[in-house]
Structures are given as structure tokens and as C-alpha cells.
Image 1 (tube, rainbow, N blue to C red):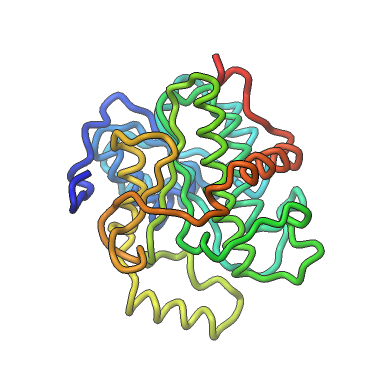
Image 2: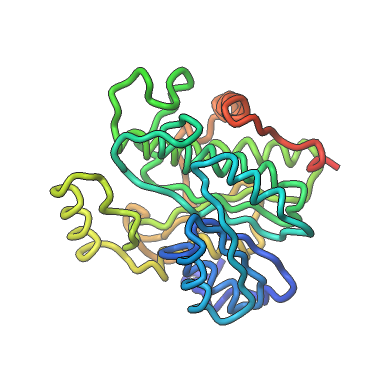
Length: 297
């Protein structure tokens, strides 16, 4: 990969179809815009179609908008059931960060349910259509995360907004690990990759419900964060570069907070195949969705 890989290095995406979740703002909007600019037909999978249409109007290229609420498994199934034809790239970008304790309509802790379980179900439901790759957004904060298989939804532990977010981002990497293992075992050419944006200034931060924490996040964005355009580069590289399955990309700068996309490391728990398998099995039980037999064909 070039040392200073940027969006101008994206090869032609003409004839390719891409879904980007959470594409009405921030990193998702930048990724959708650049992929459409390179020629891809991009579907913005968003919770609010009105905002999605506003975002689509700002993108030059072939773009469609579809409703998807990752905190509602019925919505996930509706989106997947409506999909027809091939899907070259699925970018599971949407997420929430360090929000107050809440549960999804299906009874899951909001961050785990949205960031991991919603995308887990979506990916497996769409997988028979995917022809090239799945790119899952994680975070450098996965390093502080831990997986409690007996309490994934924080029903026994005192709730920690930071801990719940870190757990969901660790789950994203474990999902990528186990998905790639299953794809390889099935002889599938589809690849599972992951990326993280470093510290990027987006509207993801500042929703903790604490005035002090939100103000600190706003100040931190101004002082230390890189732009959403730069933060989206690892996602775009993972979606378009010829990289092996299981690759994990992030910024090349100090502590992976900013810079140009490069291959980065992950913690030992994020590389644990047994933990990945167990999390997959529990995620399948919770969502009622599992690796599809059709994807093995």
C-alpha cells in the first residue's frame, strides 16, 4: 500500500455495488461519496430516510437510499429481504458511542445491539449476495474492551458507557475473525476485513448525556482529531485495496489516532479464535440469524 494512500488512489469502482450503513453523515457519508465518485452504485442504509436523501443529494454519482435501523432486527430483516442481485461490498459503518444506558427494541444493550448484533444479523442475511468483501468498522478503543459472554447486555454488571462501547468494538473484530474463518472453510472468495478511523471529528462523539463529557469530546475534536475525510481512509482502503481477508487497517500516526491507512495490530483477545467462535454462537442465539448455508455454495 502506498505510504500516503488517499481517496484519489481508489481504483475504478464502475459496475460495483456497495452498501454503506450509517451513510447520512460522518465517516459513512465520506465513504459513500468517494465510492460513488469512483463509479460504484452506493446504497445509503440509514435509519432516517429523509436525512439519507439529503445526504444523497450531496453525492455525485449513482446513489440510492434505504431505511435500516440496526437497533431493530425486524428492520434489519426487512432491508435484507428487499435486497436483490449481487452486492460487491458491504461496509458496516454505522454505530453509536458511549451513550447512556438504553436497550434496543429487541432487549439488547443499545451499543452492543447496534454496533455488533445489528451488523451481525445484517451481514449474515446479506452474505449470499456478497461477491467480494465485508468491511466492519471497529475502534482503537477495542483495546480496553472485554467480552463477558455471560453478560453481553450488561444486565448483571453496573453499566459503563465506555465499557459497553469498547466491548462492542472488540466484538466487531472478533466477528471479522470468525467470519473470515468460516468463509475460508467454505472455500468462499469473499473476504472479511476491518478498519478503524483513529480519532476523527464526527457527530459520533458528544452523546454521553453528561454535559462535562460532551464538552470534553467537543474540545478534544477541535484540538486533536483529524477530519472525517481523513478518518474514512482506512475504510476506503479496506473496501477497495487488494488485501487478504482478516486484514485490519487504521491510521499510521502516533497511537493510530491520525494519519494515512496502514495495516495495524490488535489485542490478544481480538485475535482469540475460541472467543470469536463463542461470541458468534451467542450472537446467533440472540439474533436468530447464523452463517447462511447459501454462502458456502
